[in-house]
Image 1 (cartoon, rainbow, N blue to C red):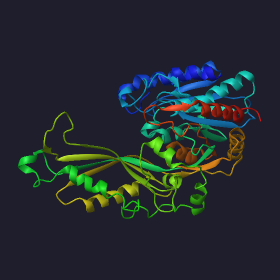
Image 2 (image 1 turned 90 degrees about the horizontal axis):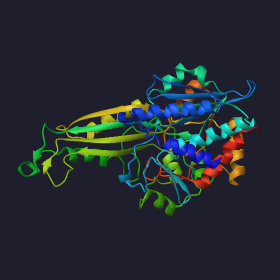
Image 3 (image 1 turned 120 degrees about the horizontal axis):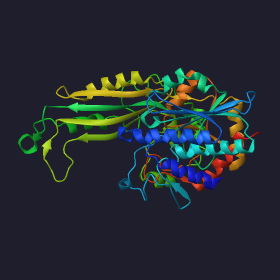
Image 4 (image 1 turned 30 degrees about the vertical axis):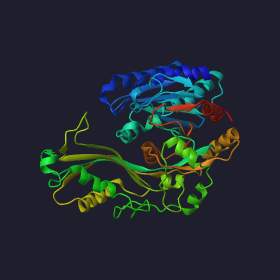
Length: 439
């Protein structure tokens, strides 16, 4: 079955299903059709639903109406990737090297959702499937799933299930994880303008305002010396971290040396009293992800920029309203910038943070299986990432969700040489086989 998995993953990764670039629409369509065909070849009823952004693949296999039904979510779209970005191989050609399967989408999310697909296919063949199974695999996760809430609301009949299972993350600490929260947030662009044209730096330098300098004042003021966000009112409505959870997180195995190896960073910036997992899972963040201004071509133009822009990503915790935070931030920008600097602040695709209910039979069943496979106690992980679909499922389907990351922590998600370690794949396949089979 492992060879079959590798063969299918090779085909799936070969599609450049990049949702952030309209130029890859043809590849998006091919990927959705490939998934539909694969489901139908394995006795599923499948369809490709259009009209909600990139197509959504829905597939269903009913063993017995009396059985419980699990809805498995995944996404087939991926982040952009090019060999010149530091990859050791072509990113859309799956390779096996150093005990890892490497390629764009190997874990985010093609490789992880395929683990469940191939195990369901095998159970169908052997007549050992323990659940009715539905798959929902979408193509806009990497762009924030902007149309997914409407899709779910319009198609509740297709998605009816007793619970949801999602595998779309990394295993922290080298022990089994169950994710119990995600941060909300939004992306934004801040553009600062100080004039109508760039100016000669010799004739106007030190006299004319510089848009990069003014933008930098905002960026440099986001955090104080204690690593707290310095925007007034930012923390006002957030749910305070449960200190029992903070202290519990400190038992999660963590190595500063491993952190430095994975991240390439020399330091870790934490608020006092918070470990890495609490800092990223329970507290909000503002991260500048890109800056654009002036001339960056070969040589030097020596001109003072009149305009500068920054892409800013907000990560918010439960009870923080993204729309309110955006207004608070707009007001703050005005207090930092001088009167001669104008600005525009645009936000996109806001979504709320969520804490998952763990008091249900499905969660406990998954926990028991994970612990038997790993031979270690499972930890509850408060995830710093965002997964808007969990908020939509909670609000619209109102059924339990079980979130089981399968990938190794050094998988390089969204980065060069994205990979699925074979020893983690082995555990993932065993978990999926046991959980989805008759128990």
